[in-house]
Amino acid sequence: MWDLLIKGATVVDPLNRIEAVRDVAIENGQIAEVGVDLPGGCARVVEDYTGKVLQPGIVDSHVHLGEMWGSPFGFKMLAMAGVTTCLDMAGPLDNVLKNIPTYGSGINCAILQFASPPFTFKTNEPSKEEMDALIDQSMKEGALGVKLLGGHYPLKPAVSSLLIKTALEHGAYIAWHAGTSEHGSNIEGMREAVELSQGNFLHLAHINAYCRGAIRPELEETKEAIELLLANDHIHCESYISPRNGTRLTCFENGKIQSKVTGNCLKRFGFTDDRDGVEAAFKANKVWAVYDAGGYSDLVTGEAGLKLWKEHNTDVGGSFNVNPPLPRVWLAEAKRPDGSFVVDAISTDGGCIPRNVILEQGLSLVKLGILTLSEFAAKTSLNPARMLRLDTKGHLSVGADADITIYDLDTQKPVATFVKGKTIFKNGKVYGSNGTVICTKYGEEFVKGLGINTLVVDPGKPVADRFVA
Ligand SMILES: [Zn+2]
Image (cartoon, rainbow, N blue to C red; front, side):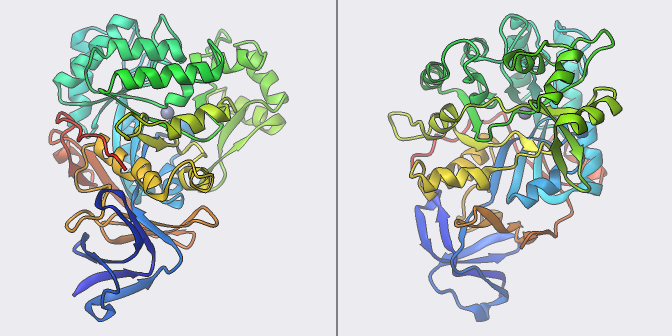
């Protein structure tokens, strides 16, 4: 007897080269069979999704779940958007872990602790010993690795390079939002990050963020980004498709902006990069603040946004419309000579930042004929699963985890999701709770002690060859 039989959907499974109407049988949280007209009598529960599309569960490889980026509601917001697995790209680790039993929505998440002054390092020149201590402790407490938020809180170039090497020595996952004390979060920062990675694995965050026209015209920057990635296939990466970015609007006592990204956004729109600039930007509806809209986060600008920002003593998450459209589309489409994608995955940089738009906006790329359904599934599930070394996710092979996203191509909205065969989301409602943390063997015991499930992976092992659709 199968536990669940999902009938009638168009199944899109790039790894197994399936794009056709099929039934999917699930047993003990795993895929038991994918076939034509499987017998309903062999299953305890049968659900019909005729007319909908079914793919391996969406893996969003760049999200934020830490409250400091918006709210504790990221888990639920991701589930509502059809995501079954995510990579949290900054923590704070203890805050995300603390919130999973209370706010978790049953989805899987891997967490990268931020390796950033003034939070986890005292200065922008941490010693090797400080790095060892941070990485070691973070992994023991359930992190998959660390994230260097260079664009926001930069380290010196040589120190950034040492951090990558040190993370890899520890068998940790390492991601970098490009930028150092020498170069910003732009195409020059990206070039520097690629060079400083010295041929080692690196997850380079949101490539589109370096192609906003900060240094040269945006399409020249996009071409340069693609050429850099073609010449450096040890770099794994994602790009998002929302026009909005995500940052923090915190000002120091002296009125200066804490985040370099926020400062640059303000200057780009003609404001000063200080407290007065943020105030003027709110009044001109050019900056949005993230606020708690009652169980989920939303954005607010204008006088209401200004009031909120002041009430929180400037310490709120924020967003600017800074991503021009053509680089986002080009980065989603670009391929290598062998047919694999230059940018491995479509991400959102969402989570508790309200822009979880993989389906809502990503499926427009399918409708425009820029991606096929199989390519979309590869970029939103198989490829990011491989980046995270999740062998049992990203495909619907027999024995794979029964993580599934079912969506409506007409409305570009999720209809139902399952994690290991359990219903997480259905028809607008979240049914999942708590969650599973994807961590290394060093953190397994600690996470289990918090009453949270674990899935152990080894980020030290090589990434599987890039998939060719
Ligand atoms: Zn981010």
